[in-house]
Amino acid sequence: MQLKLATYNIRRCIGSDGQKNPDRISEVLAEINPDILALQEVEYVHTVDDIDFTGKDTSLYKMLGPTMLLGQSNYGNVLVSRFPPVAIRKINLSYPGRERRGALDVDLDCRGTVVRVIATHLGLRPVERRNQARKLLAVIDDPALKRDITILMGDMNEWFLWGRPLRWIHDYFGSSRDVATYPARFPVLALDKIWCHPAPLLIRLRKHRTRLAGIASDHLPLVGYVDLSESRSL
Image 1 (tube, rainbow, N blue to C red):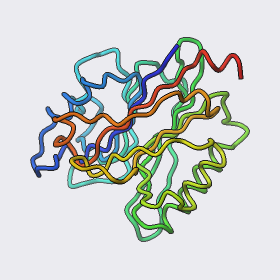
Image 2 (tube, helix red, strand yellow; image 1 turned 90 degrees about the horizontal axis):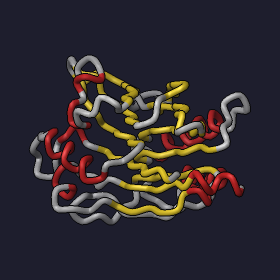
Image 3 (cartoon, rainbow, N blue to C red; image 1 turned 90 degrees about the vertical axis):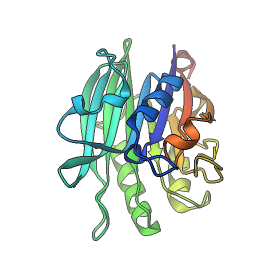
Image 4 (cartoon, helix red, strand yellow; image 1 turned 135 degrees about the horizontal axis):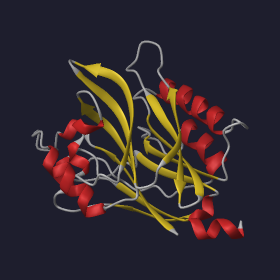
């Protein structure tokens, strides 16, 4: 079985033209049609029912990871899946004096195979990202939580491909191809990432670059494909 993954910083549905338009985000997600979707910078009022741009498919599971309040709205990470969660955990990645950050750590039942998916959005300053990467890797490597297949994805905010946070994550997951997704209109920076452990299961990465994706947010979505059938031979 092959899983289609996507990670997308939707910037509160504010496009590169400065206009807030959830319908454009919805259309971009319909273009991709992923099985598992990590969203960052999601703004919603109360519950998953407020997140209507992911479509009207009632079979989708929506898991919320708010990190802060913006006025009366929640703001943070959301994980959307076609597969039911069997466990949902939240990781606090906040760094003193900086914007609150976190990660969703979820076990999904993918037709009998448990896949651990961690969705996150790291901080803007190098000292934050170093601290957050260490916290993430400690949780990922916790013997009580380890799974045969683990996926890490999100907006890592790391401008430097040789930066320590990425090197540490590569040490655990293996190298993952760098795909430029930011800024959306003329992408030059690979801020958005997808890793899989074991690494050979991640068989392809690509940016989703369409006319609409170029204006719907300031990031392009990053799409990855994981082949679960390969796990039997590893």
